[in-house]
Image (cartoon, rainbow, N blue to C red; front, side, top):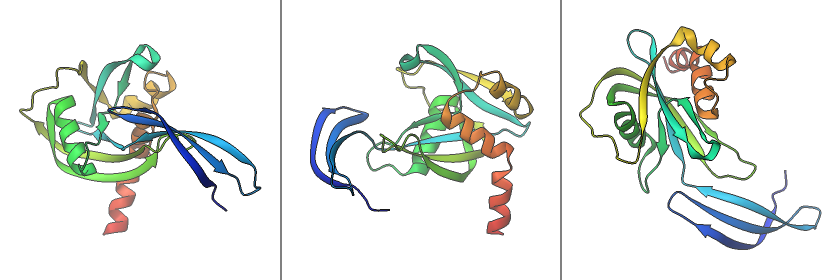
Length: 184
């Protein structure tokens, strides 16, 4: 497919987490139009699964939608930080646990129609307590959810954010097992 040609780029907002730009583009047909793009440096999300088959999830208030959500732990990459280092940091900060094993599951774009954010998804196993203080700006409640209850919570709309749905459904579909057999 022929790409659009960027003719001009204007930044409307540049912030700590994201930038908003408007690109003027020429379409393959020759027509000129604009694209509103949210630039985001990327993020990670983890499915922390303990030895008892429970997923460590966090309940937190999300201002954008004005409600609490039950989610898998996640966070934004710091400049120069690798996805694995970010995953380890976020797991410790949000749950108070660290993982002996982090298994990359997949990477995906959150909303490529207007946003550059790519999320890197991991399965965290071999969980043990970590002595890491929680950042003061994060108000989280840790909840252990039996993996067997996840499908019902999804159907009920209790688990409803994209990263959590993708991560949990990948785990339920056996993605880690398939990846292990492909590597072996």
